[in-house]
Length: 508
Ligand code: NAD
Image 1 (cartoon, rainbow, N blue to C red):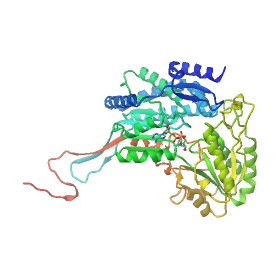
Image 2 (spheres, rainbow, N blue to C red):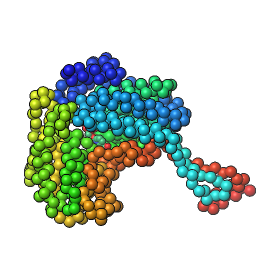
Image 3 (tube, rainbow, N blue to C red):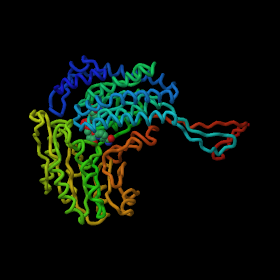
Image 4 (cartoon, helix red, strand yellow):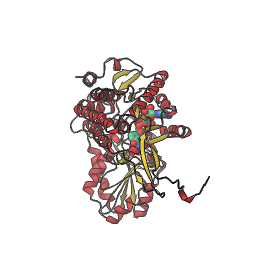
């Protein structure tokens, strides 16, 4: 079966009509072979405005449905996803080039957040706060917010929607989704799965979860719409820079999940065997195309000569090729633009005096790689003596910069001396170093780990980062609060009217 035929059969199994993917101006390619796998129509500006208005009307109805009942919709969605983990996971692999286990892992993440959100639907609780006034009660109530706009990136084409949508829908909001223009097929499939869940649930307002396929202009419509009080935008820092001021200008809320430049410190006492395995997955997994990919390795001078040669061996031998084939650990880059950006950064590093292992284009036995539109690379290990400008920038490709340190304070300073602040790790058996790394004066990132890599977060924690990563938090913990508005209520059940702070205002 050709990839094209496989895509057609997966889409049919998932309930996406063939007419939705065979005619249209958006060309979809699989990075596995570079061949065209679909032509998809995009939404017009007028139709997008209508869809946003319809989502707003849906929110006005949905907010009246009790939260635990809203949770039932998400529980059913989780069941539908569970039943379709195979085909949807494979489609993620075909559309993004991730390994098959990562494609399935992405759908598992969607299932997990549905489980989390269904439970959460009975726990959207506010505090009761002691009042300073006699016979008064003070409490917080959480109310639905409105329409949530979700803009997502190509590298987690469906999980990011679910992180937002599962929470937003149990919180009583409606959702309008603008996926990456590079991954509309998995979005269409997810929407079909949602619609099946909605049918089983019965009687949900039309437009409660809407998909708008188009380019950045459609994203801009979400950002500019007064009917959308919250936009959750995942993508590059450049995208965040365009979006953030517009949202701020109309006092809308923003959850920004932007670029990372994640580092790990390898201390003298590190368990080097475990460290090597953790680095391999974090730096080369998903072909370096995760926001949490390990991009900088800061190694103590006493273990450098032991660890780095071992790493070079792994980098030289890791299997690069078809992400669906057994044994492959590194699949393709998403497209030529990404390949060119990688080569440009490697050139810049070379000019800054770096020694580079790997980084070249790979043509494997995989039939697809004969196609000039498929871009496979050997991951690059770049030894560099200082944190040059190129090291401080996120290049969304498998490049790992390796730096050497002597004192722990210097390692921490290097670690934090980049504009981004997403994920970080330390490998050490020294309790003091580990605790310092996690303390207020340690890592400045939203995610800080000990003895595990920078990538592969669980849905139970709040996910996101500081500085140019945007400051947003999604997924677990109390991230749900962003999808609701909080009201503070004070109730007087007495006959007097005491004023707060002892203020007197006697009109008798
Ligand atoms: P991208 O910025 O090119 O596109 C992301 C999305 O934003 C797309 O849907 C795109 O159409 C839209 N968009 C672009 N400009 C816009 C604008 N001005 N207004 C509204 N929408 C706009 O990113 P990409 O190449 O798809 O993804 C890779 C980037 O995403 C990397 O930088 C990566 O680190 C980041 N990322 C971050 C996280 C996180 O959680 N922090 C997760 C995944 C990816």
